[in-house]
Length: 619
Ligand code: GCU
Image 1 (cartoon, protein in one colour):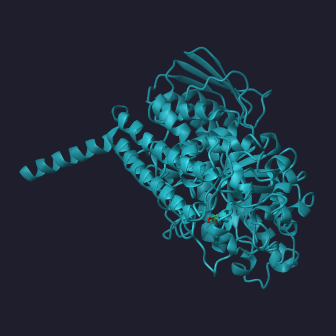
Image 2 (tube, rainbow, N blue to C red):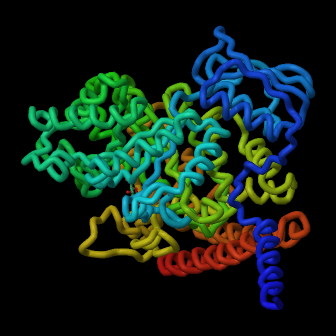
Image 3 (cartoon, helix red, strand yellow):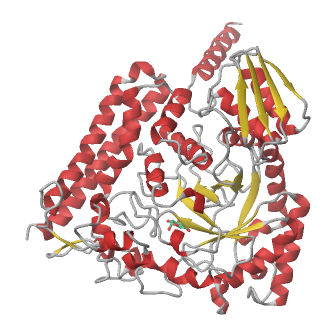
């Protein structure tokens, strides 16, 4: 008897702890259940049902009417009108009604027609079939594992969170794709996932391995002009569309970092992309071809120039259902890069910008770095109107809090919000997110808004780039050089520090990368004196004694910025201390621990880099 009551007490305690636990699993979807609103809707679709249920449960008002208005576009646009108690959401399609419902729940009362800036708002998961995630820092994959188990409840939550910010596509597997992805058992899983995501307006895409006809199909070649290969892909597309009729299409990393591609057969990127495009075209599918290539056809050329060199001749040669996807910067998701000139150079090819939500080079899931300001910087150079979509490399894993760091959820959120409307300010998005996830607080907000610049300062200020550790891309390694590695993986190649100065000369006197930019940027970036200091060492090899705008020498300025970065993180740590009373204990503690790691890392970056550069600077 006694034993029984002890058990009861323990389970009650455990129950209470679970109820109280604030593990971050709810993301920004923390609406209180009001169950007061009477919701009317005439559509009977699964999407409309979700909209109805969400509002019935969570809307704090009397009534909401959801109406289809044929005069509105069917791309998810919606209009919210009415009074506080009696709301009306109108949309041209059911998905618009759902987006409107989520907008209402976050109290977004933007006037007029609220419509997405980009047609494609797509997450790219770099998830492997064995459950590991390339550059994933938040636990294993939510889609794949060796047992082929699927936590459908979690996929529903994933879908719901994405729909709440307007994401309408997802690539389920790593761009370094396993050919097995296209095998029957996996395609059946894809169907299962697609069936869950569909009512939330999310289409599924897959990354494919270009050599699949050989490695999966047993053919002797994957040459895109070979009839057998073309047939193989057509048959495969048919098989996929039988299971997933609204399948989005394929994402392809070809002839890049060891991946197979058309280049293996002397064929061009357009030959490869068009062959796949023909296979999916009868079903309305799209091929998203990545421009992230280096070291194949243009070996030896400055890596940041290679995408343009390789793709420019393909412009105008792609099928209509091919889209080119390029990273925001010309190198590889560094804390700061100038925008990639390929966005200006491909005039006839529809383009998508690829942003990295997972913080591969920005402290992974240990550093608090709010990325919206970085993405806004990109949009200040590349007119969103020139793009047909935005892709974000996801930071989502199976960790309770999804993203590893509670504040990394803000980057997932901000990605979705900017993909809907790139004119939103970083501040507004952060405010919105904080209000829904934690609490609206000026100090915490300011920490978020300053965090990206702080990261640039303590890692790679003034245009420095690619000086991270080889293996895992975490932490500094300015002396990094391995004779048996390609030069373009070695930090010393990128900072080029010597007794004369530091930085990579990409001016017309150097590699000429500046010439890939249109006016006025080609001229502005080409001269040390007009080049913005944030890109100075990206484009120039600058003498240590060069006077920067502050009046300090380059070497002094570098020290100043590294120290400033560390000071910022110290300040973030004290802001967080003062916020203790505002935040639930579990999340406060977890963020606090991460901030200590961030501070330690920031100091390591500063000390290692300054120590290394001082050997040249003070000579
Ligand atoms: C980076 C990253 C790789 C990734 C690659 C890509 O180089 O480190 O893991 O595969 O980008 O975008 O294809």
